[in-house]
Image (tube, rainbow, N blue to C red; front, side):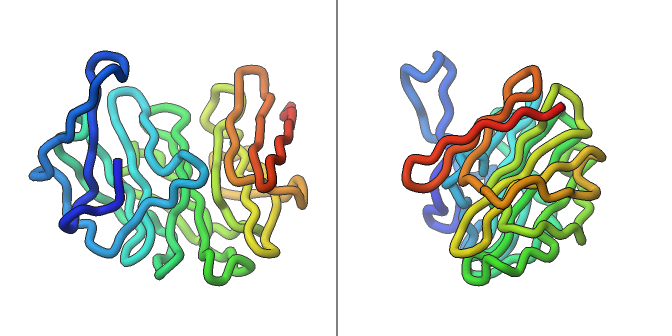
Length: 205
């Protein structure tokens, strides 16, 4: 995907394992003028089952969902406040129904109220009003279930990593160390990538 072109995200698709790509018609993409996808974590676009999800920020903070390989999209409010440099930054799905989105405001990174939200219905609705103690640049589920996940971020004095064991409803700060991106592998081991080449490993039991 790209930032909006003529008011709509541009979506590219491959059906041969990435050997060639084609731009999909934009007729199925809603107007996203003023919106953007924060790409530092690599998780502004994810898939779960046969569905694809995009989290946006800027003029609006929405979750876009496609069930037909990017040809048409539906939208839902992410429950994270939008702004010039604010909104949802990353999302993760444990399965096609259970997901978490995190974000914040890069213009005011120490204000992390309403910085997380979760869904139990495949992204059709999101429950917000959930605070983090650091900017939320990325999120990942741990251990193959839909209850345990970590969120992390680091930006201009707002840095940390937090853990949820109830699917995103509440969060516990684990560390003052934060990263731009995080991925977890089976067994509960998570890897973070941060500024100036930092790499970290965290094992969740």
